[in-house]
Image (cartoon, rainbow, N blue to C red; front, side, top):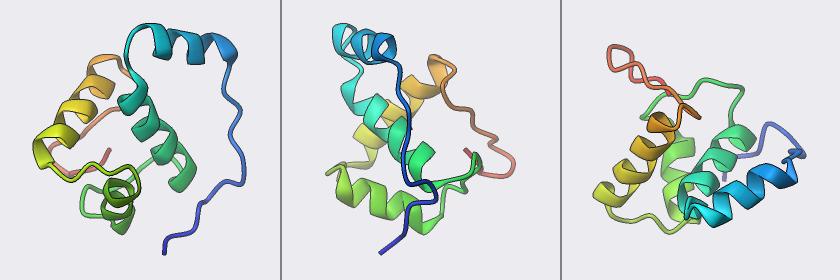
Length: 86
């Protein structure tokens, strides 16, 4: 099992409201998971990704890619296709 790099996260209430009212709960859960288990950069083949998909029950690759694409569209995450780092 992978250990979190951070013991706590502070999330503004306004951000939580925005997520709820705009139907971004699953992308936001991925965002929080990435924040909790990385220091800002994470390779796509990292064990944290496998663990995240297992913990968040994102079994289908298409669903996972859809939610990651939403994070990139909102500019909450970035992706470098040359290196494979989020």
